[in-house]
Amino acid sequence: ALLDTGPKPLTGRKAIVTSGPTHEPIDPVRYIANRSSGKQGHAIAGELAWLGADVTLVSGPVTIPDPKGVTVVRVERAEEMRDAVLAALPADIAVMVAAVADWRVASASGNKIKKKPGEAPPPLLLTENPDILKTVGHHPKRPKLVVGFAAETQDVAENGRSKLERKGADYIIANDVSPHTGIMGGDRNTVKVIGKSGDEDWPDMDKQAVAERLARLIASHFP
Ligand code: CTP
Ligand code: CA
Image (tube, rainbow, N blue to C red; front, side, top):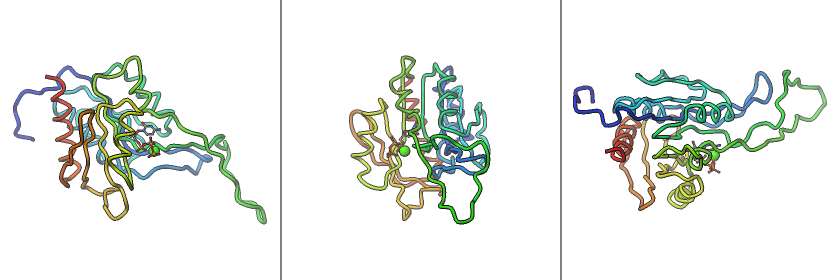
C-alpha cells in the first residue's frame, strides 16, 4: 500500500470508527469488560484514513498505538463511547468494531468495596448499556454506510443476519470467536461479510488485510 499513488477514493468523506473494549466500573479500582485488543478496529480506521477519509476513532482502553492520520477520542464506558460517536455525527461512514460491554453495574460504588470478614461477596446488579450501532443505524443523521461486527461462537450467519436487520446496518462483518479460532487477541481473522443482498466468505487473512479489503468495499459505495 505504501507505493500506491492512485487517487484517494474517500477524500472529503467523514468516517467514525469504534474500537477496543469498554470498561464498566464496579468501584474505583474494579471493572467489567469484554475481551478486545482493538487491533481490527484500529486497522480499519487507519485504512479508511489511507483512502482519504477524515476519520474519528472512538477507542476504549487499548494498549496498541494510535493509527496514523486519524483523530482519536479515548473513552472508557459504553455511555461515553455513545456520546463521543453521536458528537462526531454527521458522517458518511460508521464502522462499529468496538466490543462494547452489554451491561454496566447499575450503581457503581464511589469508594472501593472492602472485603468484610465473614460476609458474603457483594452481589452485582447489572443494567443494559446503550446499543451504539443500533442507535447510529436508526439515527436521523444516519451515515450513508453503517457497518457493524458480530462476534459469535455459534450460528454465525444466522446471528449476523439478525443483527444486520435489528441494528439497521448495511453490512455485518461476522466472525467465529470461539477460543479454538485464536481470533481474540490474535493477528488473523476469518470473516463472513453479511450484506443486504447476500453473504460472502473471506479467506483467513491478517487483520490488516481484512481492514484493507473492508475499506475498499466501503469506498466502492462512494464512487
Ligand atoms: N454494539 C454496540 N453497542 C452495544 C453492543 C454492540 O455498538 N452496546 C455493536 C458492536 O460494536 C458490533 C455490533 O454491535 O458492531 C454487534 O455486537 P455484538 O456484541 O456481536 O452484538 P449484541 O447485539 O451485543 O448481541 P450479543 O452480544 O448478545 O451477541
Ligand atoms: Ca454484545
